[in-house]
Length: 227
Length: 227
Image 1: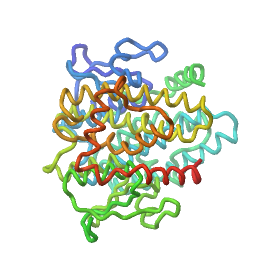
Image 2: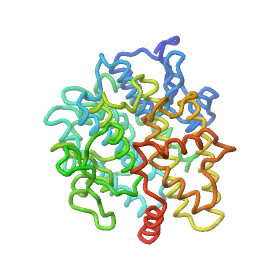
Image 3: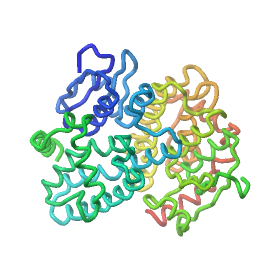
């Protein structure tokens, strides 16, 4: 993570979307500089690098224009460092299928966590928990299809969907504990449950995914600033 | 559009997302079968081809699993028919930038049209019109950057962003007329206004983009079933 690296990543340690990029940088053994952002007082660098959304992560490669949006960044990294640990498969149909499920996770599944946080009252939360559980069952089916008996969505090693879902594992564990229900469990999602335990200790993730204390503190900040 | 074609496209003629796929099929001179869908009574084919979203478009290539989601479909087509009229550039940074703006259009800009339709009252609509106009100015800046003095986002000929934005031209004209304001105009978005006139008569679009009467009828159906 040396200064002066060709790659700069603007982010915060608690963001799964930032963690997603870190995991891919690790998988591909790319040295990078992590530029920590303060989301309660955004830096000039962030505001000028991502004027449309003003959000992390943003990747800056050498002196090129900045790239925002985690899925776009990891696909960029996969294209420029295609020879080391490719994360997307080469077959166009399999690529399309990977993109479909990544899009499902980012636009349907993960936003439910934020909705759960913001929804007041037991009844309201219960309805969202139901949707999360239905979503996890869809993801179980997807995992069975993609992994085809192997350990990861990507087959024998971590691939695109392992990264896209795996970056959220700290948050899924936090949400489970905080709301007293299981997102992944033995009865409904046995294969994904095994997968979470397997990927949790993978080299590329283990120093990236924040611990429960860090996430708890961040959750408190969110509740204060964005209730 | 022969039956028995290797490519089947499930869609409706009024959907800009379906039109998007048709434009790319035209640009690449790919013969396809158009399977017209009735959205008020969805077919078994659609429900089984896209069980997660139950939406058009869906592309079925030979006997392979179906591919939903317009951006995913057009990227698939660009990968399998890469030798005829490529729509994404080959440079990874330019690809990332194209994907960023397509994502902006699909997640921020176009949803405002639907929000405008659903919002009751003059004041509510006025606030959304303001956002559409701000969005169109961002798109003007993007156009100036991408086209770099040439006629299209893609340079000398229609590229990815020309397709992604161009498929909405029927609807932008309809929304302008129906709500009595200009999305693209001489003062704020001079370059994009020129572009709309240019692309409107492009071979690949002209038999695809629905006319104002068709869109008006569809709008009435929307107001009835999804007010």
